[in-house]
Length: 378
Image (cartoon, rainbow, N blue to C red):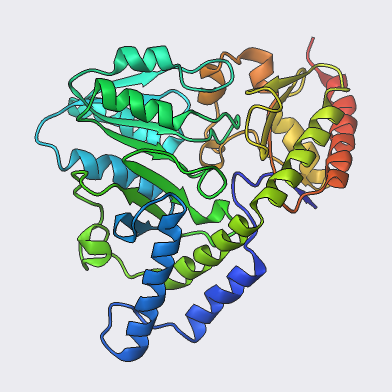
């Protein structure tokens, strides 16, 4: 099997899985309990919190553990709006993940002034549109760091500076699910992350909330996470995430070099095939772990299934939107429509993919295209 869908989820590092088992089987205590083994577990969690916060230059007190990116993105929005007295303008982009885009656009029904800003053909935010949208009534802005479908990277520091200049009272949230640990730290008020994109288990994530930001929090009940997100602490997930981030950071340059080599090898193989188009940034401009390509004359879903039969696993876009048929909102916003959108496939890489896999994958794709294009409707 060749797995080129690492933006959807990643295999857990073996040592991280071992650590998770240790905190399930040996140090399984609830850190909220008062006896000494539980206090020791709480100490481990707090140490991990500090290390994980340091990757984005945050203090441990600003780092709230959640169940993953979707909860973090939802909590950022609703926790911020819940601390406000009046309805405000909310700004996001047309290419955000569904866990940002859908909650924000749903706020129109509640009387909020929602503005969706466009992007350029690579998937990066249109800064002029954003500047025009920012005003004195803007209370919340959410823009992703790395786009999960195109691999485009937004200049978050520039966006932060623009927001603070034109809407100084606004809270600026960043969906960093595809960027945390992988990309340099950025300036913002809130930052979401998710472990299973980083070879940690599913079900663990976090939300950075800058000290001083008015924030009501999320789940209520037990008072965990400084009374901002109740629920029994996911100790195995936290400790595994801590280990995975340490591994990724220690090997960052090697990992990026390897993924870049795989991405370039696959792309160079694919562009030799007729009617292939790159979607998103130029090959050297986006992140090295995401590549989006259109194969004209074949529907992406049909090609995906053919490749799956051969043992190559890829996707047609965000895993959270994969079950919803119809137009791809992200590609449409980038101006990619019609046959080109229908034939789009996303490849996403881990540090453990190889250039040999890229060669094999390209051959599988060419073989499938040669067969499927014979049946193209004319």
